[in-house]
Amino acid sequence: MIEEDSLLVTLVRLVERLPVPAPPAQRRRGRPKTYPDQLFLKAVVIMIVRHLHTVHELLSVLEQPTPEMHSLRTLLTLDGRFPTRRTWERRLQAIPSSLPAHIGCLGRALLALIKPFASSGRAAAIDSTVLRARGGVWHKKDREAGTVPHTSIDTEAHWTKSGWHGWVYGWKLHLVVSVAAVWIPLAAELTAANVADNEQALTLLPELAAEVRYVLGDQHYNDPSIREWCEQTNRELVATRRGRYPHRDGGVEVRRVFHSLRSRAIENLNEQFKGSFDVHGQVPTKGLSNTRRFVLGAVFVYQLTLWYRYEHDLDLRVGLKPFLKAA
Image 1 (tube, helix red, strand yellow):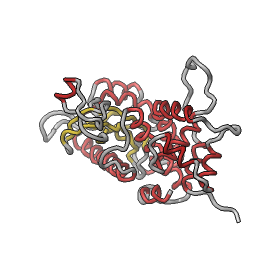
Image 2: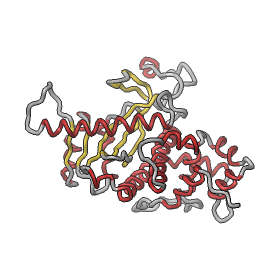
Image 3: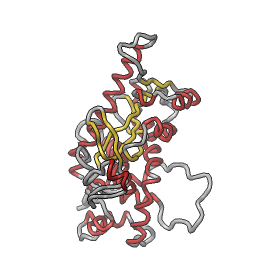
Image 4: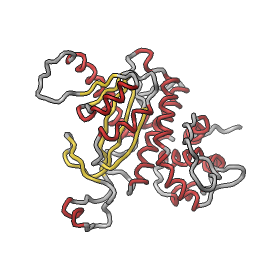
């Protein structure tokens, strides 16, 4: 009797079929990599699905003598060689810098595969959502004095004020998502919470597929540099205008429809994402690098989940959290 692969093993195998982002124009100096990034992307998938946040936890779980762990160790082995602990630590520390490119590349591939724009307008929504830092908060007076009153404080996080949550100490997940029947993450980045949305937007928007024609955002994205980028790439920026309501300028009714679509797509995806990966409270990691790996890795796993469920004719909007729990 041949046993079928577990859901986790199947998701990890999907990484082998991923489109690869374009390499940098100039190769970095130093010794060439022994192991490809793809191998460490597989490890990130395992860490996210199994809630493992350190290299020690990952390797300890992989050492367990079960058929599933044997399959996973095989997928993390190259030409009979398994990376050393030091290699795991070094490469998993570096993997967050490449995750935005992989998310953008997979987002474009999912658009081509699922074709969500076939029955709707070709629009993408951009926004950020706040994630609370692990541990205590670093108050302004202590930060200015350079004192850290408690070791639980993540000193790489920062403050922001949310219209819904008030003052929050933590991080921002900047996200671009398709506005269609299926919410597909198209670009993502994680920063400290004090980074302005409009400043980060120009690092996200170049990841969009050419077929995206409308970029929908709130008033934070009503910025001359973003509007200029959209004009240069033959796109239309639809962003909330500042000023007292009600607005009475031309096109206000059309913008109202777009803003309703944007809000429905981005806010629902944010809530589904936070619920699926248990980040309505604090994130489980400390430090920018570890938190980028966790949050961007979770976005990447969300994309893989959409891919798997599409290929198996499963619902792409309902049941994602129990699916991940079952993996």
